[in-house]
Length: 268
Length: 334
Image 1: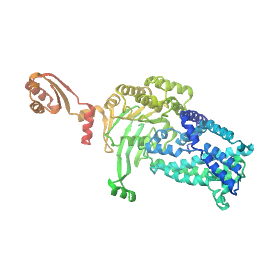
Image 2: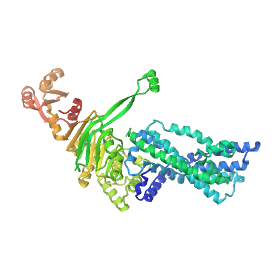
Image 3: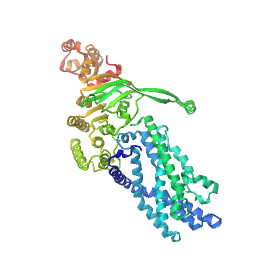
Image 4: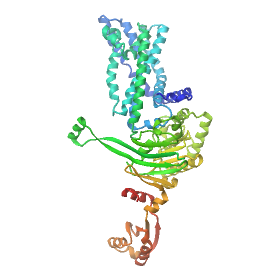
């Protein structure tokens, strides 16, 4: 996205994109509920880990597991990304052409639609959170405001990183019929190494220290840990996250410029 | 100075070839073979500001590929292109501000929202002020007769309304150069006429340059004085439509209505007799239609009137579609 709004009234463009895509997302208000519910895997895993914690020795207590997976649920809801499916369809069907004809990088349309979707989803997520604490009041806790703030900033960065990673994989649609296959393979690593299935605290120390140099834990585990007040090396967290954002940004732009030379605009 | 200049433009695609059957599938899996498709070959032309040019060719001739290169969507394999002073594939902002491309009815409008929302995005992206935006939309809505349609979801619009809304969205930034790929495809006659009239008015009002492909000859005859014919990737004609028709339509279409005496002949013997006057096209009841070479027209008509019981006779130019079709069948103009 080197053509970053090309210096012309970026806020006006960003605001217009957000307003229009928010309206677009609200068109799918019924579907939104199912999309929110489809992100309930952490709540299922919460039950599994609480059972395990009651019978075995783990780094977290059963209540800490509950809060951790609750925070995972929240982070997942705020970092859902589907850009690869959209972009692949645009390349395969040739509808990317219409966006390429405009003096705005098509990536900003995707980024705006994802961001707008967060706002459309938020009331449902809050509703689910309230319901959760009504059903399980023992899990309610008063978060430390600094930690909560840092956790939410980290969640925002996690969304940006996750978006960039998937959008970078999406660039392979210029060469492959199904770039989604890369994402599906990556998702397997993401599932286990991000802390979605198990908190990093239960990983063997050697594995944990290695994983902390990959982008995965910064997509879920670190923001979730910050929200619930688990110890996090903040300097490493921000440095590694910004490092991966920079790497994927550069890779993305490199593939974009090469991909455009390969684009045939087929189907349109 | 030309607004579009194209020199020795070519585009070659590698296309994977797969034989049918299991053996072909397995061979395709382990060893893919490709052959090069020469979609556009050594095409050169220039277009002056304000011209409306028809770009014609059969399916797969290279029209759309050429348009995609002219709009910077794809890179040429060889050759040079300049459009409005820019190299299209470099996609400079000022280039994108000065052109538009309309291809089909599902292009840039967001399907589930009213067209006005998509237009607002375009206004922001192209840096059009609110007042100016309202003025332009109002003007285009009038020209396209789209009143009250812009606040309905795009998916609820008819095909013609959707096409007009796409055209509106493509023109709200008031481009100098319009590339239109089949802008009236699938539209009913009224909608075709409406889009056609709009394009003529837009061209006259803003002095815009238009390069248009269409399978409807009515679009071409109504809008274009100049046509370019592309066949198998090569430009085979570039000049006036009238010249082409004169050059390539040495035939006239003769329609005769026969009286009872001639119509009472058996269909076989009637057809045999009619064939002696020219190239017989159809015989329906007592009406026969055939093509006669221009040089032989007086003699053929004199013989026809002397030999048969003729009630009515008309001589017309053949439809443009037939002429162009004949050029493409032959594959060259000279």
